Length: 394
Image 1 (cartoon, rainbow, N blue to C red):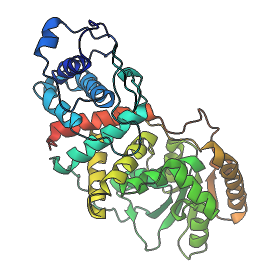
Image 2: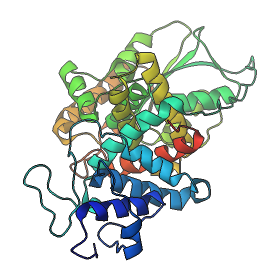
Image 3: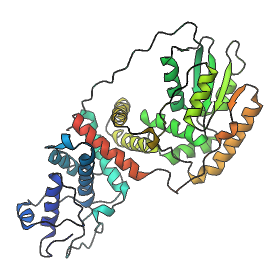
Image 4: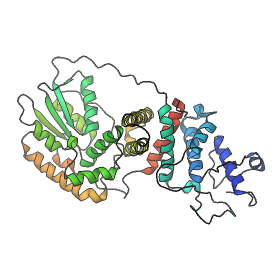
């Protein structure tokens, strides 16, 4: 930061905070305050730290890109909400900014705000979301009426990987097909094991779950099988042999292939559907659930999670942006073994199989981390802005 060395640290930080409260986006490392800036800055008590100030700057940047017309006049109020929020969980505390002549014998060493780990900013952003969500005023989504079922359409019942099943179900109901337990055609949909686990995790966190991605795998490995809803061989075995209830198992790596195979089985029209199981969305939701569960009853935790999902869905971008997490490297050998065993059972089962059972095999891991904290932070910042402008001004 370019500023006279004789300027007190408290005055310099307060001047940058004033710059950010007015909607500024200049990083601390290049910010050069004028004498007027320093003169007008009221020294803040308590003095904000690097994490709070950097999150305010990120919010200003996001507002400039996406919501500039609606953020005028609200910047200072939202900044004040951030500065008044304590970062939940474990992490860095009271992080000072680098400044000539300013040293501390104890506590966290100085950090350039632009170089803070994304994890620290995500922690604070989740705390802000937990404050804003209970007071958000969001109109109820319009649910178009379903067309009347046509009597000559095939009855069906879907099972398997949750989000893909939901997409296919919506497609079939729109075409007048009937989901029922009375003599349906059963279709079990299976996809690669990490996709099924990601969709299972997504459903869990949307209903208040707090487990991390690795913890979901740890539990499955300890049980020696996938969770019941996505244990496709067990589901198929339970349905096999029912009189006048045909059973089909669909296996596909890609969501479009799964839709095509399932709709072909049921003589329906295939269509393009959105991808699902976004790792960053699930990561953000489980962080929120873990925090709100400390102060709210389970029903309220689920309601807040649904509200956040609605806000994120309103701002959803291209479905191609969805990133499904890969299998954590430590569980990859078990996942490969499980996929191979499941594929062999499917081939020998005797019911109708569509697609390649070997498609259950997990993808090779990429980077060591399975969750992109940068994308989680991006979603958290976007959610804070959208909720603020929907009325969550607690």
